[in-house]
Image 1 (cartoon, rainbow, N blue to C red):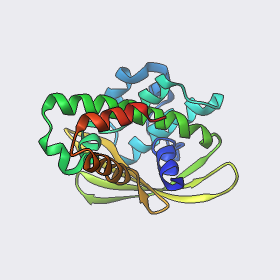
Image 2 (cartoon, rainbow, N blue to C red):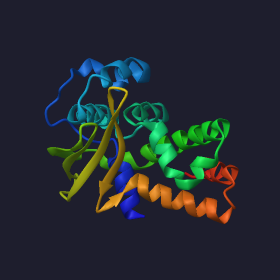
Image 3 (cartoon, rainbow, N blue to C red):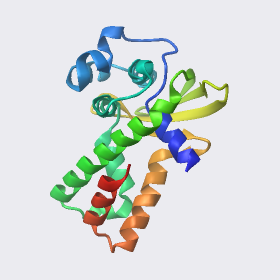
Length: 207
């Protein structure tokens, strides 16, 4: 659980090592819609930089509101991540069923950001390097120094689709967030004979 919370908290909490966009593009100043166009112009490293600017700006008052947490989702390829977490069960869903799951997953992710990012007020993250796996697939390597001085290596998996980079997973303490969610969701679906309604209700009830 400690690893899961760290990965969730770090997912969108990177301060800027070398900002590639100006502060007026922070999510907080324009909310989600106005930042989407700017996000589409960023490379893999720039995406992580801007995500960090937004998260750290939100943490200035010591907490993240529900609206701010939802705004952070602009940096994720939510369709890809949601589909991935369903594993083999995702292939049998209708478009309508997947759409309802995605809504529940988005709200769940936003709640996780809100619950766990607050503990990273004052954290400092250094971008080490960007490793290109393929032309549209990269890992941005970072080091996170928490307010109490602990240092953790964190890797950000980013993919480019339709000319835009998005975060699809984060590794902390050797633990990948989306992969762990997939294992947990698969367990729930296994126990319910693949009933997506059970998983949707489970996500709605999580705090």
